[in-house]
Image (cartoon, rainbow, N blue to C red):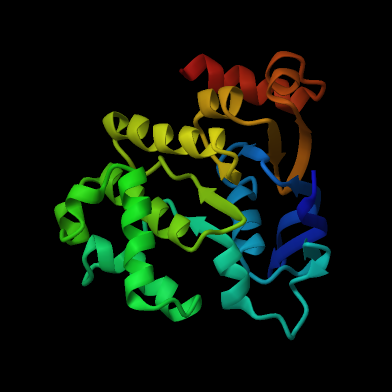
Length: 246
């Protein structure tokens, strides 16, 4: 399978505070990679670096073998191909559901309004939000907002979709509806990197799991290997704690 993304010796510091230390891993087409670890381990910062919401301090991010941290990179164009779904939805509150899913297509991809509307409706239907196209975000539940955010990201037809703890702002009843959408996307072959506390998703849906602690990748491997036969003591301790809480 072709390699879409590669992180090479990626580092990120905020002043003297080192958040990411020598991160290396690659993403192939169709991969569903779950990134797990305690809060503060650097998971979300890594995603924000991949999406260039944060500028890495060192290392490279290669997208189809081209370093996207170089000065002359077209960031909006890159972000349309490597989309992001945020913990807090980040919908435009003054726009309807449909408008939220059209605006990026028109501005960044230069699609005409009609084509953008068609795409938006296609993906809103896919996530079960087509009945709500005229609603404003404030009229929606958390789970509905997150499904709209996913549809908005999909309407850009990205090559990779990054999910930053997409269920952590939801109450337990709504977690399932968002995870079901994500499972469907994974089965359809969408390439995804998911920072998550949902161990069942990491174990059952991913083909690769990355465990981070203190800015490092401590261990990575298949879900079976990581959950059943972890080799690192830190991984064992983390899993023992988190799985006993479930």
